Amino acid sequence: YEITTRLVGSEMCIRDSNHTYSKTEISYKEEFIYAGDTLWSIAEREAKNNKYYENKDIRSIVSELKDINHINGNLEIGEKICIPTFHN
Image (cartoon, rainbow, N blue to C red; front, side, top):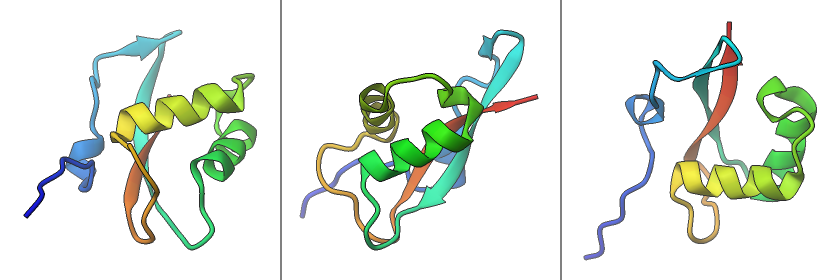
């Protein structure tokens, strides 16, 4: 039996809620992984639609998503990942 730590529940998406970035709080949204999703495709979508990732390189977004979610391998359908976003 192998046990791995993954960010699964919404309580696991909570990060340093006192952290501020340019007077805007960072919160985390949960996204489910669907067939065909890759970290690259998620990073591209977030770069276009998420102000937190505005003007950031896709490679750095992929790296950050891997770090935040402790991803070392492939994504699994149905898996939840946490994605940072600005919360005003």
